[in-house]
Structure formats: C-alpha cells, structure tokens
Image (cartoon, rainbow, N blue to C red; front, side, top):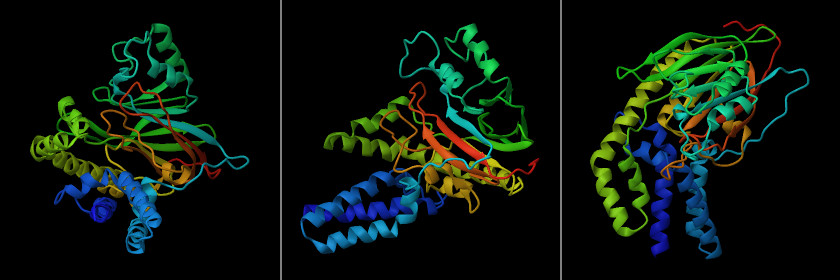
Length: 364
C-alpha cells in the first residue's frame, strides 16, 4: 500500500513537472518549481516501473509506462537520446564556449596560486568564448592571474567586446562587435547582449549571450536544501519554503519570463537563415517556460541533439540542475556539446562544436 501511494504521488509529480513549463509563472509558479526536478521525477518513475514489473503488478506497471509515454516530449529535452556528429568533408567548423565565470573566483581550489579559469580559456582551443559575470579583463577581475597569463589570454583572443559597465563579455580569435538588441534591467544587471563574429571565408555568426534573472537566494537559504535529509529537516525546509524562499522563487520565475519575452523579440529581429547561437546562463532548465519561449519553433538545442542522458551545469548546494543552454538556428549544425568539468565557478562551461552548412556569404 505504501508503494502504491508513493507511486501515485511520483507519477503525478512527473506529469506536473513535465508540463510545468507550459504554465505561465506570472499566474502560477509551483509547476515551474517542479519543472526543475523533471529528470529526477522521470528517473524515479522508471525505477518504480521496474519495481512493479519485478512485483508482477501490471496495473501500476502500466500506469508508470503511460506516465513516461505522456511525458516523453519534455523528458526527451531533459534526458535526451542524441549523439555527436562529425563534420562533412569541406565543412568549416568552429568551437564556442559559454560560461558564467563568476568573476574568475575559484570555488573549487581557493588556495590555487594562479587562475584556473584563465588557464582553461587559453588552453580550450575555442574560437569564441562568451562570458557572464565578468566585468572586464583587468587583473582585479582576472584574480591571481599573472601579467604573463593575462598577456597570453589577450594574444590568443585579440578581439573582445562587451558593454564596459556590465558583466557580459565575449572574446574571439576573429573580429567581433556588439550588434542588435541588448537588455540591461533597471537594477543594472545585463540580461542579454548580441554580437557578430566575422569568421574566415566571409562567414558571420550572430551570438546572443544570456544571463537571465537569478533566484536571488542567500547562502543561508541555499543551504536549506542540504537540511532535507531527515523528517525534521524536511519540515523545517518546508516552513522556509512557505516564507521568503517561496516568494523569491515566484519572483525569479516571473522576472525570467519577462526577460525571455524580450530575448525572443530580439531573436525574431535576426534574419531566419542567418547563423545564430543563443547561449549562456538561462537560470532555468529545458522544458521550462523561459526555455520554451526562447526556443520557440525555430531554435534547436545543441545538447539535446548531440548527447545521451541527463546533465547538470550548476554545481553548488546540491542544486544539480541543467540551467545553462546553447540554442541555435540558421545555416549551422551542432556537432557536439560538452559540459566542461572545471569547478572554479558555480557553473560549468558549455563547450560547443559547430559547422557552417553552406558556402554562401552570410552577412546578417
């Protein structure tokens, strides 16, 4: 009986989390919160299906299978079944990194004598690196980086762009400029900025670098989830969720919905056939409201197309969520998208490889 009750609850939560991204958080935020945990609910559902198969209970086995089938669309975004590709002969390829670099602080090795983030970027082999939470390229921002290391970074990436008063920046081996729409919130936070990179062969790549509204949780509030390891801890956490945390989550989902609307308008201003990558810290997961709005009917998800299984890009406080995304459209094709496991920041970098799919000059 206990397992039946648990199964019904998990199946229902899986359904709600799968389609929570279809509910506008302006009106209801609980489905958006549950959407964050879709991969975990889906995995729990599969485990329960296996339990009921072993127990020879067909009704709950069928209910579990129907739940997975009904949620297959959203689940395929959170737990994809894609695979990496190789470029076709003659295709021009490029590598791009998207990373919330946390002002190059080193959370993983705070005593490291140097700057692992800068070292990673220099040795990455990327053609373009898009950065959030980086104000500038000064020694004060590139903490513990020696002058020689900073000089190396500048030599590898001689072209850099970004609003000097905000924290979205781009570095490139090829000429780059700010183009198109940019949105800076009233708080001064930069939510997205658009750039153009001029590759050899007269290829032009449009890039939208994103840093959508965060959850604004304090360190104390982020620690609450760690206390949910016992009944008493869970009760305490639920009380907190009913207070300030719930209010902050509701506000965050609503703010991101507004950010996403403006970003989608900016995307629509770019010619559909022009190569475009929209990447960065979405602060939300695949199948969420903000993700669905930005992706629309025309954008493709590089991770979904080239990977097998669930991942996470945020790595602190046990909030293991896939909240950094790389979407694209136009005359390019995703070959692979890897999550770099360097733990200097609270976000892992996304490392994408793409190919231009035609030889025509693209100038928009």
